[in-house]
Image (cartoon, one colour):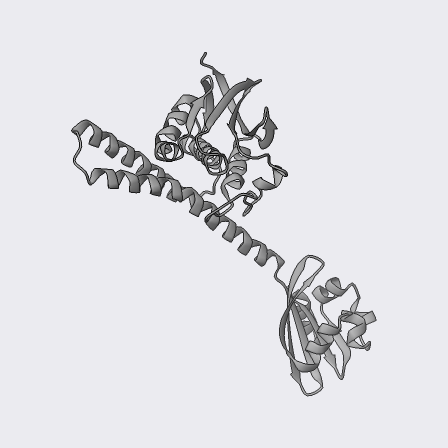
Length: 316
């Protein structure tokens, strides 16, 4: 670069933001990013009215008065800032689409974590409330063991903050182990609703025990929440080739659009009280993390919420 003008052109073209310079309502200079944004070359833009280049009265008005605004254009979020000095003006446009997407992902991650932390915190509160009362030593030790187990689960969730939400501690375990944990944690809700829980044949599977428990708790809690009181909730199991299939069946009303329920922040039509609408979204996310599928269907007059996970073998 031998000239000052050439050096300035190099730097303005190197900017990631779109820059348009104008004077008296006429374009003087576009940088490379602005050429890509508006689909017009510097040679064609120079000397033309600003509106012919930017093709938006909103931007023309912004250039005339100066200031900032955000625009949604073809699925992109653009931050536009204009400054004036007499007849001269500079318009700078920054694409915030990726930034807004990261913000949305952060909000989603926060909602997921909030939902996942709720179950062990609730269990720990129940343990502490129970330990306030005198009870046989064996029973109190059982509560302490349960509290330590849930504390360990909380610690693992904290560790997951650094590595994401996919299962990372898979091991071989019998489904009955996860079923027993879920039934113990939901005992109070089952009693309060007058509902009964039954499980199908045991199978050996390969999964993260805590993530598997989270899936089961979400599905069974949904069955309790949306089904009638005094119902029989059945957890069916079956071998599907090299996969194990688990289905939670309840006696709730038919679901008109079951697939939409697995989207984030979506709740059923009969939902009451507070809720994040993240339960089934978490179920599908976790299940897809170990390569399985999650879906809902109507089966024999009941709602069936099902998922698959890697199977190791039947236990009879």
